[in-house]
Length: 178
View 1: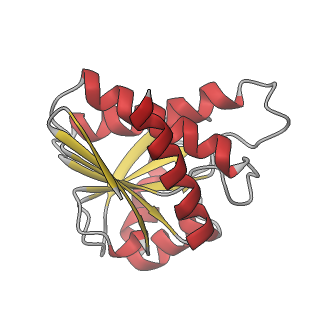
View 2 (view 1 turned 60 degrees about the vertical axis):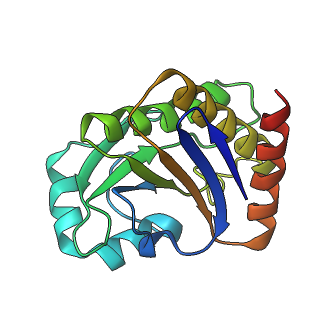
């Protein structure tokens, strides 16, 4: 499923983000940029040691922010490591921090000359963010960024499971109407 925004496109698919043929993939990272499970572990395994070597030099990353490394052995030139919030109850700034992850990732992609970016569902795994809320924040934030910035022409949400893909598609349909 896709939606056009100005000269750009947002697409939602089910798949493996480590196989994406884009300029940059976004990693749902931890603040220490040490690798981990889920998407983070998969990206580090597929990309090889060059990614971790660069992560060690970055000094970690604050929640809501992002940092860039090589793509290592991945098809993507870059990995943008975005640190999403751990969901507590939605009353501790989680929505703003999650939106910031997506916005900062796109800002860094532009700064590095990227025109295509693939995202996972940041904070929706072990960080426990409710998927419908996270999907709505992700889609709204990306849509707003693409409306006010030129250069990125393709954003793809690559989601591991069918349920998460469907939830992101619902959020994209809601964003069409707003």
